[in-house]
Image (cartoon, one colour):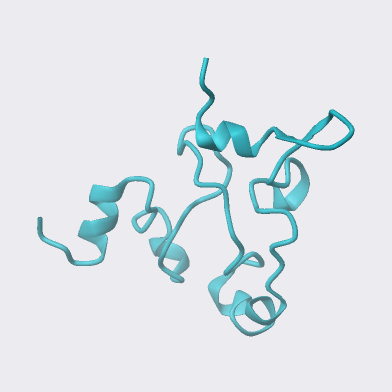
Length: 98
């Protein structure tokens, strides 16, 4: 059985035979790529975007199970509408009339 790409990123083999995830799997950075700290974005943008993880790489997971929003608008009230995982809704949000 072939695993999906996102599943494979959550079980990366290591030299000792164990596996590790490409993403943080607990705490306040759950769903974010390990080591994807953006100190300048945090300092200059996070306070007015109301998101300490602004600019950090995220898991492009299932919207029903993933805790991270894959938003494209910095306006806090537009995050759900600009979520790229619902591509049709995302395009409408940015003014595309398809």
